[in-house]
Length: 251
Image (cartoon, rainbow, N blue to C red; front, side, top):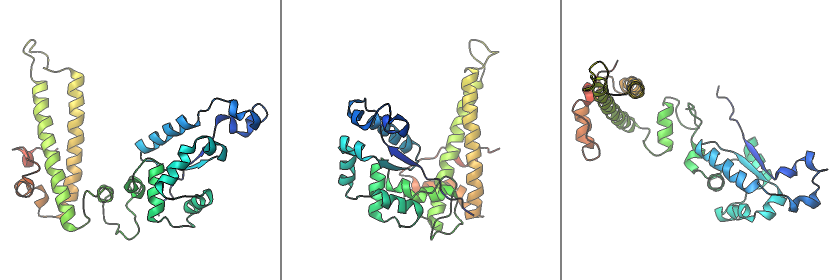
């Protein structure tokens, strides 16, 4: 059973709008106070966009009157969403149409595709079979592959070639780093921290290769996903694999 999504809402108001400030800062004194809401809201939007998190923002009337850019942003997007309308969207009482999607994406400084993409690891989408991997769903939502046998085959074959190329590069680089130094044969050529960092990258690349191999065998038990020569025939104009692409050792 899929867990219900978390819903994040933000009240866009000044620091002195809280009920606990009413006695110290009555409404008659609000205009004399230093304002922080605009800068803080922009910072919040940037953080949310950077992490791909979605939220609903409720703007206090007083704030909207003094920061009309927020209202203009809604008007420029060509779609108005009232607080009651947003509440209905969150409660599932109103379906999101294309116009809703575009204006929400615009106001949250993100893309419609990002709003449509399910949370990491979730593959259950309305109308889509549950046989696909989370990575495939993510790339499909981004327009990077088509969920057909051919589309999946081409995607994983390209990932295999890129990954094994990376492994070959890291193995070659590490071999040079761990070779004895010319100045001191008892020490490696590179600093131990640098060697450790590259070893970590190599381990991650090999782990990635194992994931690709497992999925590739599921898609084509004959192993054509790992045929670098076949890949070169199809993608010679866009990517040239290394000479040891399909032969890199995978532990």
